[in-house]
Length: 270
Image (cartoon, rainbow, N blue to C red; front, side, top):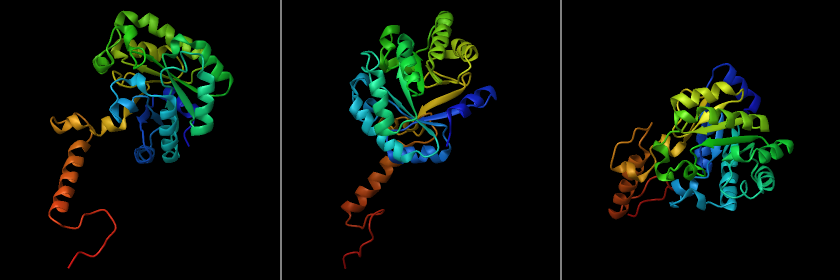
């Protein structure tokens, strides 16, 4: 099984860490078999899988259910789970983290906006719970930067914020964070932050090869989104088209009275 010291050693060996976001058992199994270093349960499951309009709607109990399912699929990678909006901001981070560790078996917790709450990072560290600290233009902090979340994937932190964000990264490292998730880093601020700290700095949307690794939603990497039925995605597959074609073929067989594939084999009607 992967360990945090291994990921930290990879940074110093200039080896990139791979993190896939998964929200179900099957995708978690596949990501784990691929050899992902981290499988992350993202708080955007409500938006990307359940159709919620805002990433702040997801609740802790909903994420806990998802994390349990993903835990069953992950045997080699480290399992991370996001906090929803609320526990960190209200002073309940330690209780929430303990529940994720005890009830879902996560290996580390990811805190969005952690730079504003270094005391919470310290408290989790003292309790022996590894912290994956997220900062930059994130789902929970985008409004602070004047960015609507729906457009956040195209945003980038301003270059003039380099000193401020380097200071945030150092503050998080000093508080005990073992990994950083720098969202929308950009090619100027990103390398500056990665070089300023000794812990790995990964990036989700808006990141790049200048960081110590990348975070990618498995569904996004695979093109699993209804919108890509109408436009060819710049992804590693087009699962939306595969799913559409497969379901259309199944529907055709049902309407034609033919036996369908993939189920229990039964004799055809004579």
